[in-house]
Length: 399
Ligand code: PLP
Image (tube, rainbow, N blue to C red):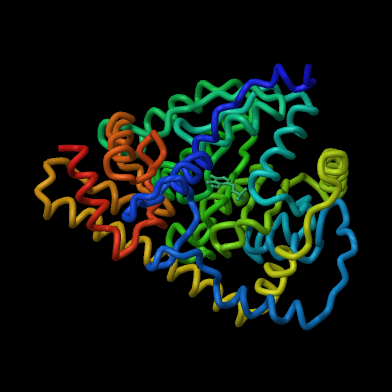
């Protein structure tokens, strides 16, 4: 009897499993709009030219491969924090933000989930819907995952009133997860005035705001202003925690480069928080990988390279937005009776199409188009070549 005989077959991951199904499909016009990874207009993975440039510089420097510290590369962490919080952020200038390099966004979410749990938090409140992986990440960190209203499926828009009402009902002191920008999967963000209201309710209830920033640069196309919600909360005096990912904006997906930071009351408190973050990292993966952090560090420490990055990031956002417009227009031209205006109102990587589970299944089985069962379409996989095919298929399943 094998020791693994009682290991049952686990279901495939709802997002990564889609790519596997797509790869096994030999239909020539098949389309993968499942995973949120940017593709150029030929449907190919895109490496930012500025990333290519600094990689050459890094190779020429013939650096060693010694271990990083538990908290990763300090200059990368400093630059990542400046990038998100802004150079003039008061807690940053006062040296009271504890920061560590993490295994991208996912790793930072998990580390902070564990830290919360070890300091008495038993639950976390995430938007409904949210990125699918939030639930297992926080559950595995020992937290009970609860949701607050976020989106109204009936009219494909933000359910702001429901959101505020639910946040008001969260017990005092609990942790609330907020998406900084380009909410995944809905692509709908609160307006700045609405963020102000959210901030004051969060303050009233003494909640702990935990920001997930996976798309800085993909929302407005300007990486420097997409952080407005986070910056507003910090200005309002919240002791926020933040997780940042450089997967999407710098196209560094497989390099696993991100940061976790926590705003504290004082430098001394930040040091204590930092020590606890390290306590959780050391027995988990010991220390983070170096290459991706070196790339980001080189880009963000040089004004010209940062400008090039902002421009290249904005061109990715621009291509996605033009595909949104074309997809919507093509659906209208085909005579669709549905209102598709949300496709161009949404921002970021995804179109939360409003297609039902049944429609998504037909889309997959009949048209070989792979998107998640909640109808989330990765706009990054839409190109000028396949947009008509996708629109026709959507029209066919939604007639
Ligand atoms: N948070 C959100 C909202 C995301 O959409 C993603 C990726 O899709 C992540 C975090 C984590 O991505 P990564 O671990 O590649 O940084």
